[in-house]
Image (cartoon, rainbow, N blue to C red; front, top):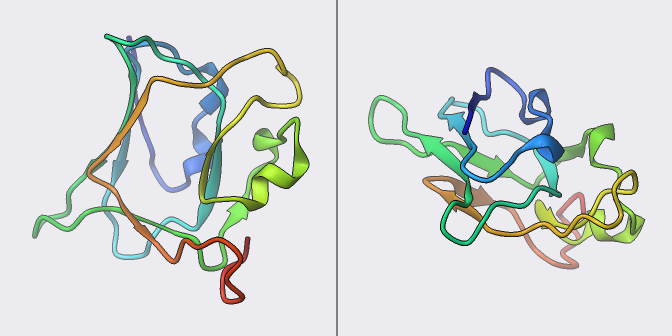
Amino acid sequence: MATHTIASRLSEIDWSSLQAGDEVLIPWRPEPYREKIVFAARGAPLNPIRVTGVPGPGGELPALDGLGATTDLQFTSRWVDLEHIGLVTLAPLAARPDDRPGHVVFEGIEFRNVGWGQADRSF
Protein backbone atom coordinates (compact mmCIF):
# COMPACT_ATOMS: atom_id res chain seq x y z
CA MET A 1 0.00 0.00 0.00
CA ALA A 2 1.23 3.44 -0.92
CA THR A 3 -0.08 6.94 -0.44
CA HIS A 4 0.33 9.42 -3.27
CA THR A 5 -0.32 13.14 -2.72
CA ILE A 6 -1.08 15.56 -5.53
CA ALA A 7 1.07 18.71 -5.35
CA SER A 8 -0.37 20.79 -8.19
CA ARG A 9 -1.68 18.63 -11.06
CA LEU A 10 -3.59 15.35 -11.18
CA SER A 11 -1.21 14.16 -13.91
CA GLU A 12 1.66 14.04 -11.40
CA ILE A 13 0.44 10.57 -10.43
CA ASP A 14 0.94 7.53 -12.67
CA TRP A 15 -2.68 6.43 -12.31
CA SER A 16 -2.15 3.15 -14.18
CA SER A 17 0.41 1.96 -11.60
CA LEU A 18 -1.96 2.17 -8.62
CA GLN A 19 -2.65 -1.11 -6.84
CA ALA A 20 -5.06 -2.51 -4.27
CA GLY A 21 -4.85 -0.52 -1.04
CA ASP A 22 -3.18 2.54 -2.60
CA GLU A 23 -4.57 5.97 -1.80
CA VAL A 24 -4.36 9.20 -3.79
CA LEU A 25 -4.81 12.36 -1.72
CA ILE A 26 -6.14 15.41 -3.56
CA PRO A 27 -5.72 18.50 -1.39
CA TRP A 28 -8.13 21.41 -1.52
CA ARG A 29 -6.98 24.54 -3.26
CA PRO A 30 -8.88 27.72 -4.18
CA GLU A 31 -8.78 26.93 -7.93
CA PRO A 32 -10.40 23.64 -9.02
CA TYR A 33 -8.42 20.94 -10.80
CA ARG A 34 -9.30 21.06 -14.52
CA GLU A 35 -8.01 17.70 -15.69
CA LYS A 36 -9.71 14.51 -16.83
CA ILE A 37 -8.71 11.08 -15.57
CA VAL A 38 -8.99 7.75 -17.36
CA PHE A 39 -8.76 5.39 -14.42
CA ALA A 40 -7.20 2.10 -15.53
CA ALA A 41 -6.02 0.55 -12.26
CA ARG A 42 -7.77 -2.16 -10.25
CA GLY A 43 -8.12 -2.52 -6.52
CA ALA A 44 -9.65 -5.50 -4.72
CA PRO A 45 -13.17 -5.91 -3.31
CA LEU A 46 -11.99 -5.63 0.30
CA ASN A 47 -8.98 -3.45 -0.49
CA PRO A 48 -10.00 -0.79 -3.03
CA ILE A 49 -7.93 2.03 -4.41
CA ARG A 50 -9.05 5.25 -2.69
CA VAL A 51 -9.04 8.71 -4.22
CA THR A 52 -9.63 11.01 -1.26
CA GLY A 53 -10.14 14.74 -1.06
CA VAL A 54 -8.27 16.58 1.69
CA PRO A 55 -10.51 19.45 2.93
CA GLY A 56 -9.37 23.05 3.06
CA PRO A 57 -9.08 25.16 6.23
CA GLY A 58 -12.83 25.83 6.33
CA GLY A 59 -13.82 22.27 5.39
CA GLU A 60 -13.99 23.05 1.65
CA LEU A 61 -13.74 20.02 -0.61
CA PRO A 62 -11.24 19.92 -3.47
CA ALA A 63 -13.06 20.26 -6.79
CA LEU A 64 -12.59 18.60 -10.17
CA ASP A 65 -14.10 20.87 -12.82
CA GLY A 66 -15.06 19.78 -16.33
CA LEU A 67 -15.16 23.28 -17.77
CA GLY A 68 -11.97 23.62 -19.80
CA ALA A 69 -10.62 20.30 -18.50
CA THR A 70 -7.64 18.82 -20.32
CA THR A 71 -6.39 15.26 -20.68
CA ASP A 72 -2.79 14.27 -19.98
CA LEU A 73 -1.06 11.99 -22.54
CA GLN A 74 -0.76 9.18 -19.97
CA PHE A 75 -4.53 8.69 -20.32
CA THR A 76 -4.53 7.50 -23.93
CA SER A 77 -7.45 5.12 -23.93
CA ARG A 78 -7.97 2.06 -26.09
CA TRP A 79 -11.22 3.68 -27.21
CA VAL A 80 -10.49 7.30 -28.11
CA ASP A 81 -14.14 8.38 -27.88
CA LEU A 82 -14.34 7.24 -24.24
CA GLU A 83 -12.23 10.20 -23.18
CA HIS A 84 -15.10 12.51 -24.12
CA ILE A 85 -17.66 10.75 -21.93
CA GLY A 86 -16.73 12.14 -18.55
CA LEU A 87 -14.38 13.85 -16.20
CA VAL A 88 -13.42 10.52 -14.65
CA THR A 89 -13.70 7.42 -16.83
CA LEU A 90 -12.91 3.83 -15.86
CA ALA A 91 -11.43 2.17 -18.94
CA PRO A 92 -8.35 0.23 -20.07
CA LEU A 93 -5.49 2.25 -21.52
CA ALA A 94 -4.28 1.65 -25.08
CA ALA A 95 -0.92 0.36 -23.76
CA ARG A 96 -2.65 -2.19 -21.47
CA PRO A 97 -5.88 -3.22 -23.23
CA ASP A 98 -6.49 -6.32 -21.09
CA ASP A 99 -6.48 -4.48 -17.77
CA ARG A 100 -9.93 -4.25 -16.18
CA PRO A 101 -10.25 -1.20 -13.92
CA GLY A 102 -12.41 -1.43 -10.85
CA HIS A 103 -12.73 -1.42 -7.07
CA VAL A 104 -11.98 2.28 -6.70
CA VAL A 105 -13.58 4.68 -4.22
CA PHE A 106 -13.78 8.45 -4.73
CA GLU A 107 -14.63 10.36 -1.55
CA GLY A 108 -14.52 13.92 -0.29
CA ILE A 109 -14.31 15.44 -3.79
CA GLU A 110 -16.69 17.89 -5.44
CA PHE A 111 -17.36 17.35 -9.16
CA ARG A 112 -18.37 20.47 -11.09
CA ASN A 113 -19.54 21.21 -14.63
CA VAL A 114 -19.83 17.61 -15.69
CA GLY A 115 -22.46 16.76 -18.22
CA TRP A 116 -23.07 14.54 -21.18
CA GLY A 117 -23.51 16.37 -24.47
CA GLN A 118 -23.75 19.84 -22.96
CA ALA A 119 -22.40 22.59 -25.20
CA ASP A 120 -20.66 24.46 -22.39
CA ARG A 121 -18.52 21.45 -21.43
CA SER A 122 -15.16 20.73 -22.99
CA PHE A 123 -15.98 17.04 -23.40
